[in-house]
Length: 68
Image 1 (tube, helix red, strand yellow):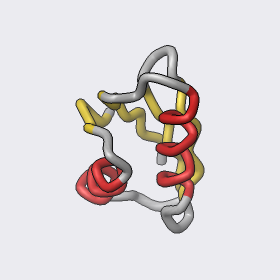
Image 2: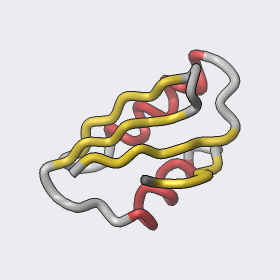
Image 3: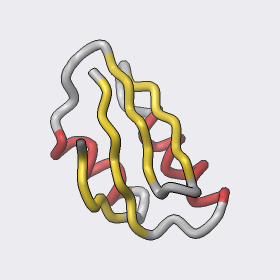
């Protein structure tokens, strides 16, 4: 499963790293955040509910705009 997450609130490399650590903390998830495009690409062997992704990003202090 691959999902692209558009995130609002990232302004620097530290923000991107913080979100990447939070997403990679989810069980079975590998994520890569791109500050330039304000997105994260999430990869997992199983389906991760959008609500769970949103909760992790929001707990980190950022806002999910969309998930594709």
